[in-house]
Amino acid sequence: MRRAYESRTKPSHGVSRDGTRAQSATHRSAPSHSGPTVQRQLGNGYLHKASEGLRGDRGEAGQRSWKKGPAPNASATAGGLTGISLDVTFNVSNQPAASLQAIQVFWGNRTTELGKIGAMTWTEGAKTYDAFVDGGKNSPYVTMSGNPPAHATMPYYLTADEVKNQVTFSKDTGTIKITDTPTAAALFDEAYFETAVVAVNHDGSGKDKIMQAFDWGWTAKGTASTVGKGTKIAGKDSGINVKSSVSARFESIVKNDYSTYSHD
Image (cartoon, rainbow, N blue to C red):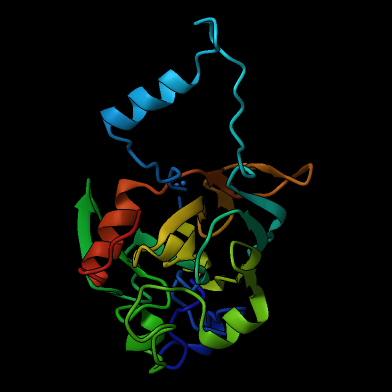
């Protein structure tokens, strides 16, 4: 909830993106994964010729070798949660793209202090939940604090300055650092975040590709982790649950706020 609202909330509950955005549990900076490698399908005729090439002069299977490039990879390499502060780094390799970005969504039960936040709402049991893309056009960071969205047209979490400072990427390999300090989580009985690492314009396709994702958040007014100790990163408990793809709820929140956005 890094991209939470700042100006229209009580100072005592201020949520800042990194401890300064006001009190929405979504201080731009919630619980679920990265997409599979795109595969090319070959025609039957080509496959037949390739299989013929595997036969030796005596009609036996040959030992013909095929050169393979390095396997694509994306993984968390450092960090996680310390208290309520998120600071995690992901490495992406052998994934041609324009750059790296993050998309983060938040959902939580409606609170009396904050009222309705975001543009997506649903009811489960006796509880009403609100949701939005963190840092996006419908987030409290924009609608209540008066800030511009992190990106003008896309559901990205990092601003242009953050990309400069937190992303290092060249051709197909690099790192991205994602940070947040959602102090407003203390207002929520349930505060959930889901964050995705995104390869922008993957392989010149015109579409982004989700490389990895992770869940995190709290119940009981920010005192109980929703994922326990989480995935071990660099041999340590991280407090986040790293996954290979995003959840259906993540997709529905992004689609609600950015109806034309799609990804692989």
